[in-house]
Length: 286
Image 1 (cartoon, rainbow, N blue to C red):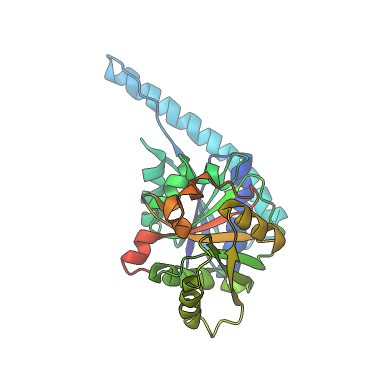
Image 2: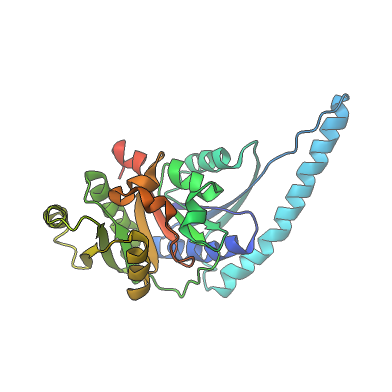
């Protein structure tokens, strides 16, 4: 991985995510490309030169705003001890923010997108209708979504990976292992068995066989009647730093754990989510 894309709306939530981007870039020997997309307002004018002058003035104002935002980012980089990480700043106009982010990720050959999310209800806010949620579903590379309340202590030593032991999840776990290798975390593969069936245990054993050489991977089957409570409890009890999962373009919340009520989940609002988009696994990437 050579480039980490960091889309930013210049908010406090984005600043929190910037710390994660810098830390990952330092450990992975990558650069960070910050990206601010601004959408030009639609203005109907009879005189072309009047409209042109307006857009020129608007572009200049956006440039000045972003130029003013760069020194605080540089200060964060310095204070965090990552002055040696190469950071490039991009400012781009776009009619739609999400497609502009995805296009820039492709143009810059980003191996990872790191972005902040707002909202106090954690994953539900990330997934349902947000810009970060759209990026999670449609990106051509892994995405790390960092909640506004996340606090990075400089280490990632406990990571949870949700799984139903599918082939695509095996490929995704391999990517997670690769991305997080510099941190040497304990990786917990977690499944919630709502039906209390023995078949899941057998599937887990088959899945686990492919990762025998990785001594830092543990497997957990959680039994319970409430998927939300089981996962929240696991994140809390194991002090999970990052929650990783495969995401689908359509209905991935329902697909997760094969349980429709998953869409009602509201995880801990301080836990970053590392998404491996399912379509990248289907195309043979990773």
